Image (tube, rainbow, N blue to C red):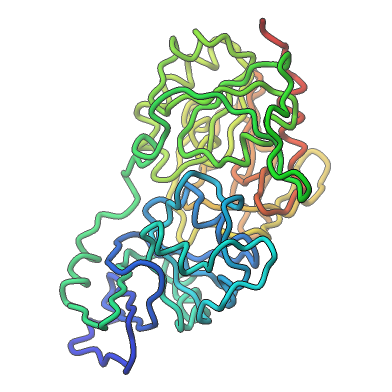
Length: 390
C-alpha cells in the first residue's frame, strides 16, 4: 500500500498500528501508553491470551488475535508462561470488558498496563489477518497515547528502519542468566501448581533455556524427571558437570540460524556424547541445524491452538498448539534424520528423529498451555527412556 500522505485520524482514536508498507490502522489504545516496534503476526487460538502474551517465543512481535473477545476472562497470576510478558503488544477487535471469571484477579487491560504492554482495540482483525496471510508478517509500530497525539511520519520511519527478525538472536537476550532447579508440577483447580511433585530419584534432565515456557518444565516434572535449567550460553562442559541423564532444548524467539551460531556447537557435542535429547520449537530447529539441515523464514508462520499434525508412524492426526515463524527445510535433512510429523496445513516439517543418536524433536508445543493435550505423551516418551543418574 502506498504511503498515507495525510491519514485521517478518526475522532476518539487513541491507538494506532503503522506498518512498514505505509498502512495506518487506527483504534482505541489500552494497557500501557507508549510505542513498540516489531513484527506483526496473528494467533488463531480462542483461549489462552495471557499465556500467549507471556510466551517468550513472542519476543519482538505484536500479536493480532483473530478471536474477537480478548480480555473477557481477565488476568491472574497462574496463567503465565514466564515471569513477565514478552510479546510487545496486541491488536484486538472488541473493547476489553470487565472480567467475567472466578479466577480473575484483575482486568486484562490493567495487566497489560502493569507490564508495559500496548494494546489496540476496535481493529478489523479479520482484514489484518488476511493481509498477513497474503503478504507475510510485516514490520510495524504499535502506539498508544491517551491524548491521541501521534507523529505518523516518525512511526512509519521507525517501522521501515527495523531490520526484522531474520538474523536476530533473541534467545540469548531473554534466557535465564544462571542455573536454577524446577519442581512445580501441572496445575489443578484444587491445588494450583503442585510443589515438589517431581520424582527426587528420577532421571536428571538439564533443560537449555532459549526462551523456555514454564509449562514445558511442569510437564517434564509430571513425567517423573528432576529438572535443572541452564542459560542458552551454557557450555558443554558446564552442562556435563551437572551429570544429566538427558538434555532438553527449549522453545524461544528469533532466528534459529542466528541462535545456532553459539548453540549448535554445544548441541553437536551433546549428540556426540550420546546423551538422549528432546527439542521443542526453536529446540527442534536447532537440532536440525546441528545435523546439517537448514532453516527458512516462513511467510506467515504458524500460531494458534488448532493446528493439525500428522504422525507418520501410524497416520494419527494430533491437534496441536504452534508458535513459530521459521521452519526446518525438509529437503536439507541428512539421511540420519527422519521426519516423524508433518503439518497438514502446508506440509512443513513438524517433527524429526535421528536414526543414529537418541534424539528427537517437534516443531509444535506438546505442553500446549492452555491446550490441546494430544501430544503430551512426548514428555513421557522422553523421560521414561532415561536412566537415573546418581
